[in-house]
Amino acid sequence: MRCPFCRNADSRVVDSREVDEGQAIRRRRSCSACGRRFTTSETMVLAVVKKSGVTEQFSRDKVVTGVRRACQGRPVDEDDIQQLAHRVEESIRSAGAAEIPSHEVGLAILGPLRDLDSVAYLRFASVYRAFSSIEDFEKEIAGLREAIGGTGGAAETTDTADAADAADAGGRAD
Ligand SMILES: [Zn+2]
Image 1 (cartoon, rainbow, N blue to C red):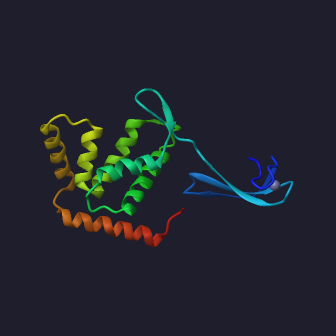
Image 2 (image 1 turned 45 degrees about the horizontal axis):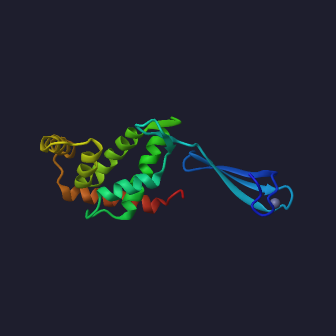
Image 3 (image 1 turned 180 degrees about the vertical axis):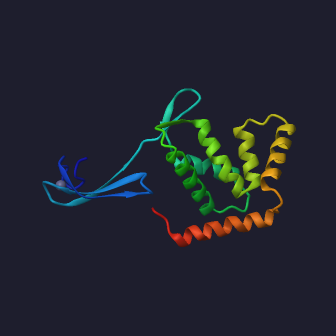
């Protein structure tokens, strides 16, 4: 990579460290011509293979957009959505595959979204699983009830908020 100051092609790595729990490497470089320093970041390119066979780079922003749409009008804030997208990306990347089918991205979203908001989950699942009848919704809702078990909606909301607070207190990698 060329020096951003003088365009020289040669640089020396002066420091290198893992970030994002080992999913990226950041390198501090020193330009061998002008001596100025800059930082580069290296991440594995995760390819998403669409139904059509076309591949595109995984984008956390796309996850955010899809989830935000499903959460419209729901008591879910932007932080929750960003955190969910982060979790989805982590779970996908931790699988270690270089490419994944797009429907697996959808699957990875469904779990955390169900924890976040039942209604948003149903909306997302209805599109993603192509619900075509009321029966499809009924089946999904029955499954949802089972998964939630005895806990009411209020308790679920509190748990989500607590988890978010705990994560905030712990700080974020980026
Ligand atoms: Zn330079």
